Length: 195
Image (cartoon, rainbow, N blue to C red; front, side, top):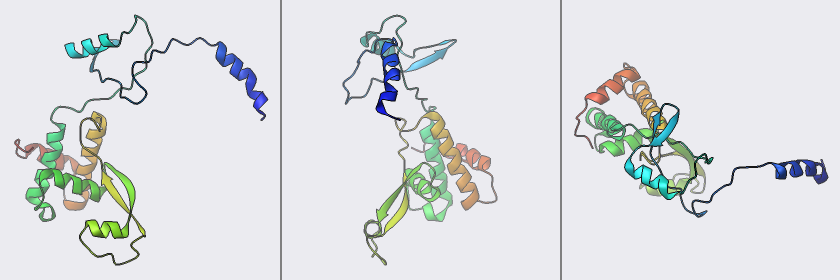
């Protein structure tokens, strides 16, 4: 197609009326996070602080805005996943020298759940492990890099999916006589004071 073929479409698009877009932030900064609570047919500010934050945006009645919805993690989700780590530290010899958080990071790396796949030069990987590289130090090795478990990094559904994937891996690879539901129930019974 020739560029001229697009002219009618461009002229039609310029005639469409869009709601005015109000710039509420600099292009390099994050938009303010505002907590919202679901009520029948609407989202309303979750707290007085959220209400005040919305007021600072100088929004107009019936103005159309665009937002990204982020589901908060359930309270205690981070503690629950750390209790899974504590269970592994207390019951599985290969995790015994780690703390609960480190155990989860190792579990993420072993399973690939909640990880990015990255390539690292073999020589760099060997140096990080305190070993000598046996092959070509420039050859790329594929490894799993665990995601952060921070509530600002994972939404509630992502966190629950990660927890389920880790329990499924433990049930498959570490305790094959158990099902993932057993692992989840055991995790709920581990010390409540686990960080």
